Amino acid sequence: MTTIYLLRHGHYESPKPVAPYRLPGFHLSPEGMHQVEALAQTLREEKIAAVFTSPMERTRETADIVARPHHIVPVIDERLNEVQSPLQGKTPEEIHELGGWNWQIYDTPWYHERGGETLEAIRERVVTVIEEKRVAYSDRAICLISHGDPIMLAAAYYEGRELTAERLMAMQPYVPMAGGYRLVFEGDRVQGVYPIVAS
Image (cartoon, rainbow, N blue to C red; front, side, top):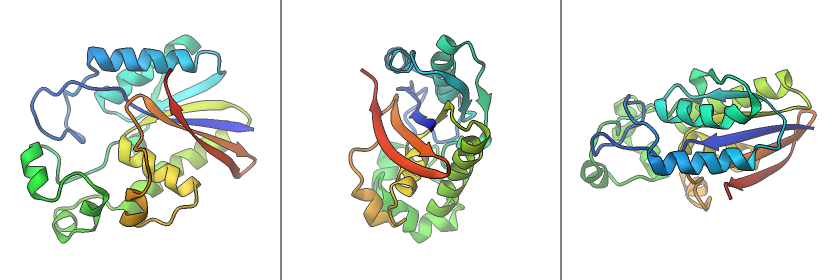
């Protein structure tokens, strides 16, 4: 049995009131560190063989805390990165005028005309990582630290959900910060997708 913990970073501090996406400088807040410490405690008794992380500061800091009890060094994997989005750097007011944070933004001409990453592309890169690591770490447990939408798209894939904005918007609850999913595989077949909330 192979277990992959697909985890979201903790709460972060915003040096300016804009959507970060791939902007640098967004680090874990004290609240976020506390959240991730609780997550690390939840996973402390697991035999984690490796930790892979998005390159963003908030995910790397999360990965460091999660990996520490297991005496392993996290490895950056660019494919776990946040969404490439034209909403990056925009204020909440600007995003509200564009329709707000919801899955339907991915289907708008505005988003595509400005080079926004598609749902299919996001899902493909994250699932590729999962499948690659599932084979490389067969019968072991690993952690992948990523971001909200990439995690939700991967979870939807392994739950067998059709990739449409309407179906994704029906997925509740949204993965919390310092939360995620435990994906359990028997060979190449997923046996379960279980939400994780740090206690």
